[in-house]
Length: 375
Image (tube, rainbow, N blue to C red; front, side, top):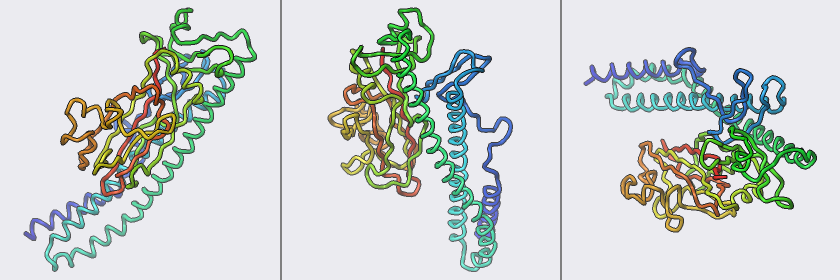
């Protein structure tokens, strides 16, 4: 037994040293972190390019070189934010790997007889001490990256709002500016390119006109309204029901958004929750939920029954373990619940609240899409 266990100890020590010594910076070449275009404006060959997938909004001119400085800055900040998010994930994975190796090392050490354990203890202590600094540095970097992400998210939201307010003021002063009530009306008047369009959804005397992103390739055209929680976001370290709170701020005011949804139209909002030992419902209590535009606690998730709660899989009797949601299986296996929220009188989502992520290995990631309305 001793001959088998000592090589195991040495192998784990080697892995531990390897984990501690690797850099957390993105590697060059094929394994590097690829920063994909994020929602906002960017320029390729002098043309404005916009990616709405993450739900944020940005505007730029058609030439690219002489565009508004603030809007170009918006695009730069959005790309930097995604880059930091990817680096944050890499640091988090590195930290988890170091912790896992320490646990494996301790388990292997405990399985040895007392004499062998005593002989190896100085070597183990030397390795652990040498890597404590690495773990502390990783934790510090992760905390700093998360702080930077929040700060830049606030800047992006501020720039979006300034841009929209400026557009509203210009529409009031410049009577020659075109404005229609919907994306469809813009398309009927010869504007069939995807992009930002100024809408006055309820006419004179209603809410101020505002910009939306119009997808003119869909039938009928679809209006998108973004928000400040457009990135895939981690939740962990919060055990109590609904104790981790994410407030959602939209690119337009709530009055403007509800006016858009008040017209006869189909609106929806995508949501996905990836869970690892983090239940949505447990022991008859809701641990995670979303909050409607009128402040109501909503315990059903996309596809679930608004009255009874649950998720889409419950309607088809396909939830893991026969629960209301896949995440209610509450095991240390990655699962997910996703779909579109279509209850228009409750949209948009104004808060997301999560719990049951305080134990070892318990965590989750959520993705909240923009509000989408056939328009």
